Image (cartoon, rainbow, N blue to C red; front, side, top):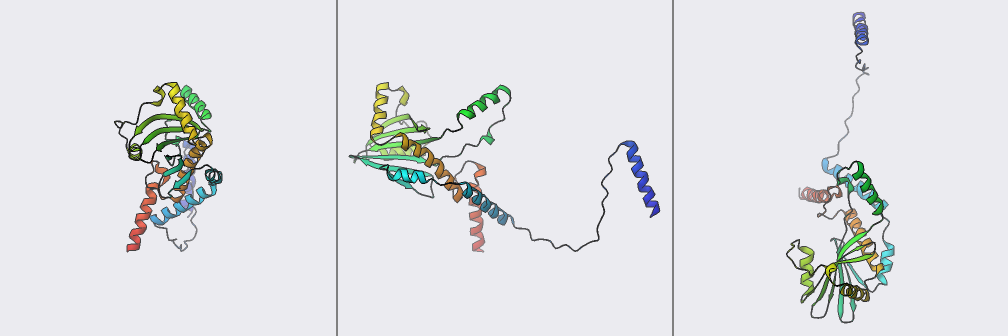
Length: 265
């Protein structure tokens, strides 16, 4: 015992001279029998994480009561299937059927943006301040008669300010709307660029849409309801088609599949 103690003291003295860091001295307590806790399986951990995320999002979600009150007096009928991203607003104006079709908006994730430095960083920070309160939604407005023919407008609203990309006439507006919504093919013709039209004609189109009930308040509703829809879908964790990996869309689908297999066993 004394020999070991002296050996330890020499070791400390040598380390002090060489300016080395001594490893920590461990003092072991008498061995005790430890009961190992049962670890949750990966699927159980995943399900619990999803529950925690849902609880957090639900606490932050304030609802959209103002939107519900607005739409009741707007003259538009709301179609909102809880299992899809699509929202439709429909109303009859004379012999025309006006329909607005749009999707749940996805939150912009600036974590994916490359890190900037110097002057570029300052410019980007300035843009962030300008866009801090900006809301945006893209949508289609179709105006058709009883025979199905009419106009299709491709639009975007930013802070309740209407912008029209294109306008076109079709003998079958419903089919054109479906093609325009689903297709990413640039060869599909959906009318001339709106800003290339004569200014007088542009103003006439804006006035016509206003007469159909496309007001600033309705545009604000579209922007807000689009974001609200995305939040509700996220909380339900029922969407599979979500671009952001952090949105857990594929994970929720995996949980569904795993639970299904578990039940079969």
